[in-house]
Image (cartoon, rainbow, N blue to C red; front, top):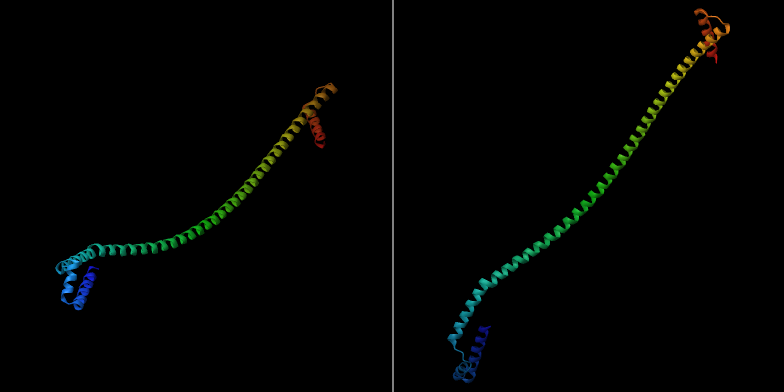
Length: 191
C-alpha cells in the first residue's frame, strides 16, 4: 500500500515536473515531506516485516487452519461412518433381541410341554400306585374277611359241639366232635 502511495507520489511529482518543470516536482516532494531515502528504507523495512510475518505468522497459521479443516473434514467423515455403523449395530441388536425373544418363547413352550408331560406321567404313576394300594387293601380285606369267617366257623363249630354235648347230656368222642364240626362247616360254607 505504501509502495502504491510512493509510486503515485513519484508519478504525480513526475507529472507535475513535466507540467511545471523540474522545480514543481521538487517543490511538491518537499511540500509533502517525502524523502526518497526514507521512503526506500521504509519500503525495505515493510518488505522485511511482510516477509517475516508471512513466513512465521501467516503461513503457520494458514497451515494450522488447513490441518484443522482437514481434521474437521475427517471427523465429519468418521462421524458419518460411525453413525452408519451405529445404525447397523442397532439393527443387528434389534434382530438379536427379536431372535432371543423367539428362542426364549420356544424354550418356555418346551418347558411348559415338558412340565405338562411330567405332570401327566406323575399323575398316571400316582394313579397306578393308588390302584396298587387299593388292590392290596382289598386283598388284605378279603384275607381278613376269610380269616374272620374261618375264626367264626371255628367258634360256631365249637359252640355247636358244646351245645350238642349239653343237649345230649353226654360227653362226645373225638370222632363225633369231628363229624359235627365238619357238618357245621358244610352248612356255614353254603351260606
